[in-house]
Image (tube, rainbow, N blue to C red; front, side, top):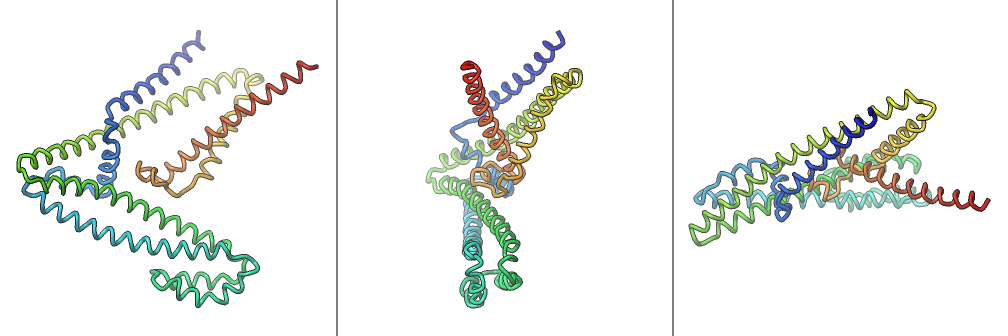
Length: 315
């Protein structure tokens, strides 16, 4: 009877998880998912723009469009500068990766000349020159290479985040510009009202999504806690027959940990679009790695079991 109650509790919590997921899926307009993502990104990076557009009137819209078009131009120029620094650093990084024990000494001897051309437009020219000059032998290069790789990854991530924000902000400014260019005053007012309704809806959807995620995480944590709690209780009561459960749980935790450690710290464009943090992205990598390992383990178990059964039957 007690086991049935435990199963019912866990099943009920899992069903509630599914209901919440379905509820969010049906309340979210899939046709506007790109616009929703863009508005969410602009809200996070530049809430003043969202506030201005949400409260704009047909009379104030021209000045707002002019203001944010100028901001977008300045941002675009800034990103071109970041891209230049990123490309310079990438070229330098490839130089370092191509070094080996045979060509290191020659590269070091030619480095002053190479640095003048490579770092001509680099903001950190002297820092990179001083850094490489401290690398006296090829064995010392490994630590310096890791430092440059980390710096490049950070710069690339910053550039991608800037590009995604500019794309999202440009989309909103372009829509506002199209409304502003409307000849009919009535249509202009109606289109502006529609845009503001969408922005308001996006804000509500974002809050709702956050709420569902929090509830989902809580319920997921509760489900996991119940599974572990009842499994551990049963295991301690019948340890001789249940110790294998502890081994499986330990292996599972190890797989998750390995997945997190080897997960890339560089956010992909889709991860940036979804607003994931570095830790969040690494957790997604860990989850994917865990699923792949578990799936592979299940397939291997089926294969091994089949082979062992075939061998036993022949005997």
